[in-house]
Image (cartoon, rainbow, N blue to C red):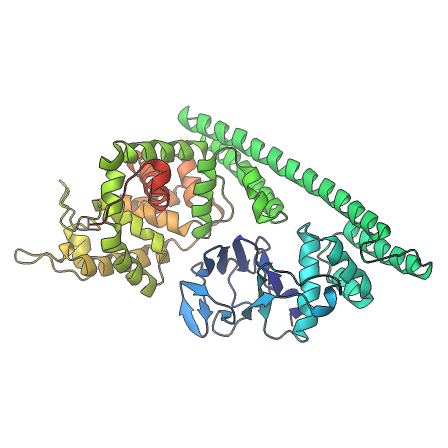
Length: 490
């Protein structure tokens, strides 16, 4: 059975991935074959903690109920699959003995953590896990060092787990030996003595140097990827050989895999160091919500998103974005409720915003109609009545149910990396065109994802523009004031 002692984790602000893949922050032992590689994400922010299922095979459960997305409260049970690993959300509290008699108890709010329910001695493990995570996250303070040095068994347990590096292990051992020796010589004056302070400073200095080196390597790697991406754009526009283009894309993918591994060793707060463009960071956060892991956003995509943000916000309070977002409260609650019931990503609601401007009566020159701009044959295919007397495409709820069925079919068809992105592209171009694009790939098993066919230039120009337009609306809608968009309720 897997080692349960590795299943306690302090939740950092931002996204925490859970699954069997080594790219996750919380990696589940591979012997749990009912857990997907990228099973779920937990988002922690000032507003609370949310878990989101990443279209896992066996589902994500909160208190026994399968969820697509759910807010977590202290005491809630999280299960990966009906019979998979189970966790409980707790508050991480320091045990009383870790606080010196002359110190006041900490006033800050306790950190949240998820704990495997099979762990024994939760109180003791809580402190051990907290110290271990502080070492890994470069957050170990003098008081923490005092607690660590008081208990040899706890220190040995942290080292035996193998999560801390060899240099960290050596430093901890040296600190312990030094503290024992100085105690015997009565030179270990107090809990804030000079010996311990020096050891802590030494520990932090070495750790900071290692951290800085890794961060520099990650930044350098990202620069290399940007240069590689420019070469790909050049090769595609100059219509160079497909073999050269494919080789360069695969080279970019190898670098991305390396960067993903490096990023897993950093604190969430340092992720901003990877971005020179704030817009790229916003797009990246959206990709994380879709369960994307290994990708590199093309500069071309970033510029097209920026272009469409400018188009949608032109005109201030009279802009397209203002009109569209003002209708959001009227239709998004219904759309997102239906999508949750169908276990679909709720962000797909933005497709309706782009397709019709959230106008149920919208009619295109080609004959598409309603919130989702369904063509007559597609609407009938998913159960809507479209005839001379009745057109249910204009019924917001019925048409949304039909759209949900269509999205489920598309996600099942493109159930692979970047499935949501492929689903969006297929909604615009039709599943037939996307399947034809995928058939042109030499190695469909390795390269069956949106970013590959986007870079290969096999999608129609309209479809290439469709994705950045949806993303632009999402970004504006989530921060309208930042883009000067005035939103009024309708």
